[in-house]
Length: 212
Image 1 (cartoon, helix red, strand yellow):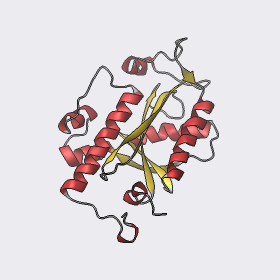
Image 2: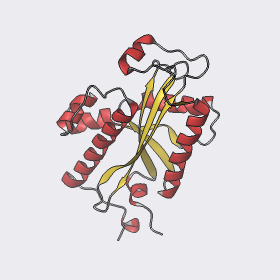
Image 3: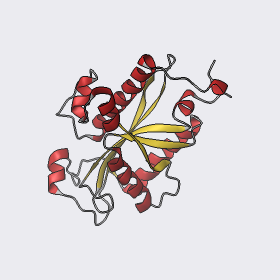
Image 4: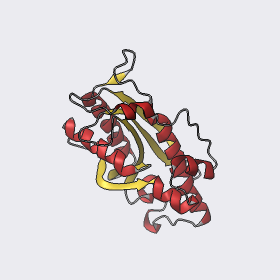
């Protein structure tokens, strides 16, 4: 069996686009309230695109700090009786297991987090794995692919909304700071920059592993 294109393009890593909504900036102390992951792959034309989205609302862990100012930004009511939220242990199991399964299916050695200000998201992902004692965290522990840097390179912009508009995407501020919306928009931007690079600059697939 030939290696998949996605496993060849990123040195064996599977890029997974992540966005989290939280109760603050401290991954150890502040609540993780919402989590979204977008999986990507190459289509029949070797263009990177979204495949599907994983999305969870999450109950604050016991003793979690929640800054009211953070809730004003996200609009999340963590204790609303109709909020369809998972406890962290269940969310972590479902989330990490699904990513590990896709990573294995695509013959990748590890996942790498893609995000906007990606180290922030990675900190909360690693803290989630630690709190829930999840032993098989698929993500590289410190390496990330950041659309801040990619946006600066491609468009001279570092703010997500400005990068989106420069890339030809609509930006709906009423949906911003929702994990699913932000993750899907970030994924579209990431794919667009990767595809544009391939078209304008070019990318050579490893000759010994090139797909027919």
